[in-house]
Length: 434
Image (cartoon, rainbow, N blue to C red):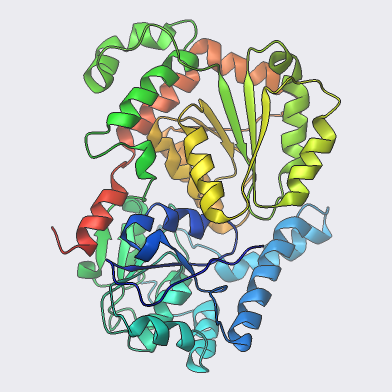
């Protein structure tokens, strides 16, 4: 995998720091690249000049994450091992409300490595030009605080709920400020003992190219076309005409793209067999040019080859597209471009759960880990997603939801109920504006 090149001497608005473990933390940071020097996000585990000791520790963490994600698919043994390790990042039930500020094993373990010097090199480099420090990963926020980074430290929350590990050992004394993705994470941070003045409810930072400014110009335009595809029989439009007009104005007469589904595969590549089963179920619709299907595989060339090899005999005539990139910037830019004409998003409940705010209904793939379990609960709570049914019969249950206007209802629910301006709010706070 290519390493991002970083320039530690350029003076702009803020350092934006992520980690290269899966796509969630990097995707979140990518939306804030405009405030970073040269629009470059720094990966704390792969920047130029990282000490070998730090690199080894990061690589061990990442390898374990990806191994467990894949190993989970092995019956009995895989599930048992996954559940055992997931206990260390488990999110406890919210009720009854109680003090959850006591530190746990994960937090103490991270703290021990930081006190031995983990991350000191990165923080020392950035401190030479001490702009605000904005990170999408809790460990890097702890590093900045421990090594006395001489400016504000901000941590962006990438999920709908979070484990105790996201908060320092002594939250009452910490100066880390959190950008809360929703009210669930805001309230959870309070239970973990974070001072209220250090909790900023901004919403998740969505890509600005899919929003189009604080007036939502691009989003409203794209959503209008999308709604036509999601409600082919006009049932939802007839029932909720005043609501649609109030939020979107007059809808266009015809859609500007065919019905399009995007299946996003996570960084560990654990859903490839499910994606292939869905493609086989929908292949007649794709062949008939009634449906365009996109498989998002990120930067993993082995996944690109896997799908290219397995669909080459289906004769899908270009209506199946494999979305990938050589590096994170190329991949995320292409993903966001394609997303403008995507009508349905199939994904495990990762950070992409927040993309329901774009008016895109989500088919929720099986979750991996405690945080994704809570993301799934949140999506169902808001009414933006539906659980995936049997992949072999996707051509049946998916079109039932289309014909009844069910997807249109989920899309409108996400557009109305979910926060869309998180990126703009975070940028204003970094710039010192209210």
